[in-house]
Image 1 (cartoon, rainbow, N blue to C red):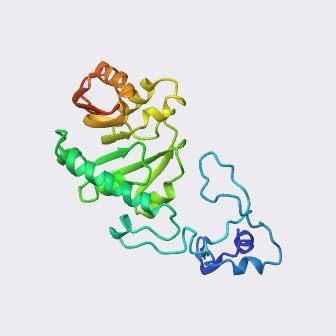
Image 2: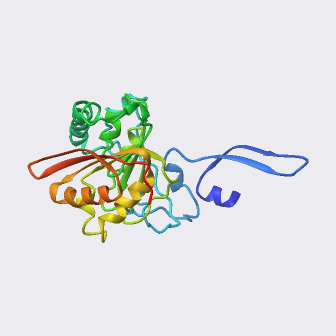
Length: 269
């Protein structure tokens, strides 16, 4: 282990061995610049190629190469983020889509303040854990920052890889394939939010029933679901939700787009 750490240029900050048990502890520190990598006599393990994405994590095979430390200002990781909660609204230089992020944040602030918090009949005092099933930039979670809630931002694997942006804003997120089950303790969430998720999955997943049943498993009895999508998608979804004895509290449609607000009941088959 010591030889391996030396080969990747990690520096030993502390080393101690217990006299009785002979157990050793070493504390290492990763280099903060790339200069030391070039000073190695043996370039083993080698540096990764420039076209290899260090953020590729979904079913990406592990490679024995070193990714360089971000150095240019347009690279993620060169700047320390702002303190919370400023980091929710301050976008660093490496983000090329800062205008889109700002517009996304304003979009969800308007929807949540004008509709979700007042116009749906949801008792927000009983909502603690929320899942955004199709988070993009984390605007939905950021707009709920003033509420006493915790949001899990799920990035579907077929969508753009925006998880670094989620983390940069100080939020929590994960990649997931919604054609598979979600690894979570049953009934962990009080509210599920799905914005145009089903229309994006209709070509990947065989049936929407499986996703709705998974939502039923994740949501606690009495929990809520807000689904926004095309009307042609929402109509069959409403039938599935009613078959599970969910209460439909609100439906609204305009210009072929619509929304369903439903509540899971205590009913079990």
